[in-house]
Every structure is written in structure tokens, then in C-alpha cells.
Image (cartoon, rainbow, N blue to C red; front, side, top):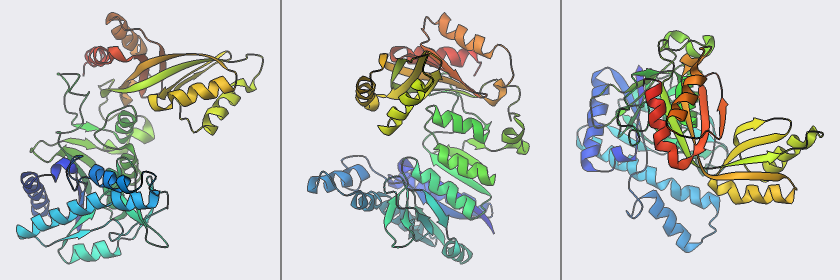
Length: 406
């Protein structure tokens, strides 16, 4: 039995017309010889009576400090609504379909409510359903705890994670992630008119793009698929475009350092906003100074990024919502520091830049030519990033997209 997992986002199931488009994708998979497992996200926007945000607001009207367990139960309702409505749509069109919660589909998680991790998936029931010709419509974003069956949610990107995890557990031939765009793009099309769809990209590159700000697919889903070498395709529910294939082409990219697009230095430009950059003065005569700084920040629950550490200074960035807490920690621990608010991080991502001279020169020159000051750079084998003023983020993304011929 050839199995395909097809995940549909909230916009793909939000209207009767969209759900008929989903039906066409499912039907196409069946005609191609696949047994489909459908994963759905919650539908609706805040204000719609069935939207997840509306349900959460209803709960908080009863108790602003609602227990995280009850919050997860309520948050699971949105996907249940979607799975039931999608199953009913397919049934009306003549298909044998069945709505399943994450737990009914065999997804067992730990008990970290709001950000649970999948511990295992028991595929016994799902395989029995598939073998009987039934199309399971599985709620994304959720599972249940092992001992007492409490509802849990998987955190941001949870439906992508559900699809990839089911694909891995079922040894699926393919996982399709359907959304409202035609694939993964070389940059945010709202910033770069010339942005184009990538036909193919490696697992490692798309993980980097997701971590650096691209929002088409969650990196945890990619990492699960990569571990089992299951091809992922990101494509649109509303067109016949082939989408973007995410894979280890020829089994190489992560293991050997080769890029599936060898002739390309870069695959995309990404950006993150709402950052504050800190420059902290360290005591160069005290080797424990830097250690104490990051231990203090960790103890306060502050996640830092864009890190540069030297004898005398530490440079790092935090998101805006951690700004006040970071200031408080640094003041209370008597560190001398400066900061730049309203910063952004722009990144060029590409497996093809490994070992290639001149990549940094091109990166710096493109920002200099656009009169954009670089406050800091960080890099890896596949990524070069710069912290800049947030007001220049559009110009920076456009300049880098052009400079790297994307």
C-alpha cells in the first residue's frame, strides 16, 4: 500500500469552495494509486464563533488565568471542527472518510501542555482504516498523553509536525503540505516583487530558512522528515503548480556537504524583525565574566540569538518581548551595556556557499551600496546574517536578493 500524507492549512478548509479544492487534491492522490491520510488545521479567524482565537477568548472570559490543561482542551476544538467538516464534505462527494482526533490517530505526547513533544505514534488503527478503504481526516496540532489520555497541543507549526510525524510512522512515500502559496519562495514576495518559487531545496537549507524567518513550513516538521528521508512537497491547494520539493537529492546534501543546486550560491533571503541588539562589556581579566552573563540570562528564561563573544564584549539579540527583562537582568548584575532597539536580522541561506570565496564580500557590498549600516554579522557554513535597523529591512532584502541573483 502506497501511503501519502496530505496536510491542509486553515485557509484550505475555511470555505465550501476551498474544501472542494481539497477534495480534488485527495481524489488526485487516489487516482495516482495512493492511500491518503489527510491532516487539517483549524479554520476561521478571530471573531468567527468556531475560530481557535474566539474559543480561547470565550475561555478567558470565564477565567483570565485559565489552567494550561483546560486551555489545551479548548485549543484542540478548532482542528476537531475542521476534521469533522472536511470528513462530511468528502462523504457528500461519495468518499468513505472518517474524522479522527490526534489521539485516535495514535499520536502520544509528553504532558508539556501548549508545546508537547510526540513520544510515539501507534499506527495500528490508522493502518486498519486505510486497508479498509477509509480516508482518515486527522486533527493536526494535537495528541494525547500516554497514561490518562489528556489532550495536548504541539505548539507553533503543530499541524506540519503532525503530518511529518504521521508520514514517518506510516513509512509514507510522500508528505504534501498544502497552503495558499505555490511553494517556498526565494524571499517574502511582499518585499521582493521578483521573488520566485524554488523547485527543489534540501532539508538543511529549508530548516535554516525557517529558523531565519521564512514561515511556509515549520522546521520541526522538516527535521522529522529528514530523519526518515521522506520527501516533502510544499504546494498550493488552489493551483496545479508543482510546488517545492524538499529532499536529500541523491542522498547527499547533509551527509556530504553538497548542495542539490550546486550552481547556486544561495537559495533564499529571509528576515526577522522586532529585535533588540545588546552590547555588553565584559571583564577581560575575568574568564568567568561571559559565563556569568549567559547563565544569568538563562536563569531568567531569556533566549538569545545572533551571538558574538570576545574577551571584552558580548553581542546578542533578543525579541522585543524579552527586552525589559534583559535590561533588568543586566542592571541587577552590574553589567555595563548598550542597546539598539527596533532591529532586524536579514539572512542569505544556501548550501552552495560552503568554501566559496567572496560570499561575505558580496553580502557586505550589497548592503553598503544600499546605504545600510551593518550593526553585527553572524554566519555558519550555510548562512550569513546581519543585524540592521528595522527601517531598512525591505531595502536590505531586495538588495541581497539581487546581489545573489535569486
